Image (cartoon, rainbow, N blue to C red; front, top):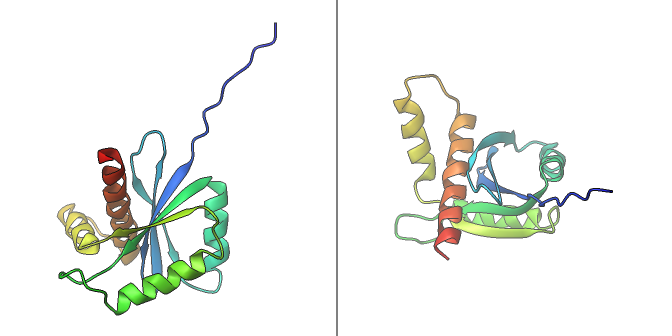
Length: 144
């Protein structure tokens, strides 16, 4: 008797903390919904091919991009730069792209890393900030 196995498709979600020099990336899957820092990519001439490969390798179905604003919720120069990044991102990714408020995530990430009393890099801050962005998105999805 032949056995059939039912496979549940697990898709991953990336959270992106977009900066002018680097993009911090966090990852969670659609089942566990637990996010963690994944990698930080430098925005160099190989950035888009590296990101395309990561998305493919990790079977990413949703990208959650942190949207920076000032404390009053108004757009800033970085908001515009992030929107331009997303416009280019749409040329590389056909899945769902969600914009998520990223208020103070980089500051929170730096404070957390500093409290650990170990050395860390700007790339560590970026990927942890991406984790906070992704956590906020997942929490909003859980609330419905």
